[in-house]
Image (cartoon, rainbow, N blue to C red; front, side, top):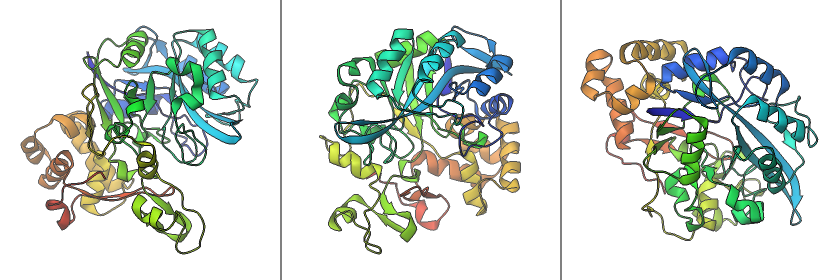
Length: 408
């Protein structure tokens, strides 16, 4: 069975998250987008666990259902600790096969942090030690380092991360099977590191509001089963893991180097030429994902590993409509056009991936069809994001008619 999954989202109990991140609204958005499986997020929060138990019904093996959408029990935690003389802040995703395991996980983790104050709790436990603790509860639990290149909170982050996976997880690295690429990188960038070849690269939205669900996702062809999905990730099975759906990484908030306060955006080469210093205020730039990838890579740009799982870069439909109309993506006019398209063509991913341009022209707006075509062909421009500022997609500029995007 082919299906699209987004494993990493947050509930209303996480900081800076929409109050609409509740079970039913999440399910409704997933149906509109064409997402058959979504992570619950935040299962470490007691109140969210109560709501999940109330709203979700058991469905397939290790999965749960609400309004026709399957849920997989997931959480993200912020491991904050000192290792090798440096403060580390690493975000890790946790998958669990049932509420029994969730209860055991939370009972253990509450010793290392307050699980009530935030849906993504800060825990004073080494990532390696947490892996050992979780696998002692159940070997079916899966741990995946989250958005591994983000400067402030990640495995390879420039400010608090490590230079290798082994430095973080030591002898338990063999129990790490998947890595989340994050919005500011895509698989092509990660393929530049031969040390990552054995890991399955997954992509998720890290959504804090319903409309952001599915901006990155994963396409599988297997049974809807917790155990089979974990097996696919552990084995990096190209037959059952078809492709990931990616943001254009330039659109991510940390793709380029920069200093938001001064409005300075720098490519890695520009930052290096300035000794990573802001030319306006003299403070150190926030080193972005592309720079960090280049520092740690041992392969040239453009390398493709023969066993790599493919990916497709997309722009969310609301952003395509917003760029056409030159308005904000969360405005009512964008919402109205979006809903009409969904009524005509069933789901957002059906529109972005499968519906022929001619059918979109006939069923809606020729300009929207043209925008989708340009996105599929990569004929767009992006002003790269930096230091917490999202990049800007330019689809309908005159220049984007002929310019093919260059990742590097």
